Image (tube, rainbow, N blue to C red):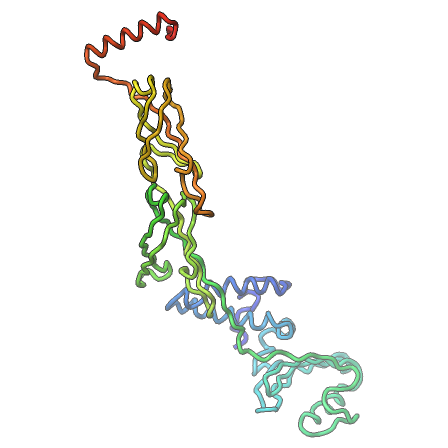
Length: 358
């Protein structure tokens, strides 16, 4: 029996001088690790879970811990003569034992369990221990102590009462969070979307997958996460379920770059429009707009379109800006006449000093 039991401190993986906080931390970690909900069908884990709970039930109770530190498993072994013993029925007492004599009978100690399951340890120092025992036993069974005291009285006696027996400490803990990744397009990040995802309990590969519809808010960007409360791992012992964290990855869109709430895009402008000025069509995230091009516009010029950027995640009324970067179109299929005209234009510019030799 008690000789085959593992040391409670070893079960929890703690030292004998561990404080209450360390005992609780060790218990919570191991109880979560070996909980049957996380280890379905695993008999070894099931036994470990029982051992962990049994160890914590004793070591978390200061009174039971003191008994265990003094007598070991024998403190709670009905056959050992130290601890609780067999109950003597409702309202009775059972399991007296461990009465050891010190030098000349000066010191005696022991423990017992009353009928309601309460544990008691006691020590007698000095005086005639046998007389004190006579008083104690006499009063327990309807008699009267030699000194006329009812119950545990008299000098030289000190002890304490225990808890409510091994009913087991209730353990409940929140379930672990799950993590998953979701990829969306550039436009889906701009306008928001709804995605259908399928997740499965990683501890139960054969279990039925769960399908969820997730609303992706407009303005989200790569690296952000969406938390779905209660969609993670189930809790243990009635604890709340964990959450599902969806990490977002946004795809690229050719010709577009995002920087915070602002976006940058390219706009091609004909050579003649750049020279003489005019108008050009610019594509935005929310439709096309016509922009004016100043005469003499250079390639790389940025046209700012206020409010045409990304919506704020925190405030839907706020938008970033769009910057349309001018790329001048250089014609590559000129007719002989067009080439002649451009040559004349070049000569005039050189004569006026507008062109400089490279």
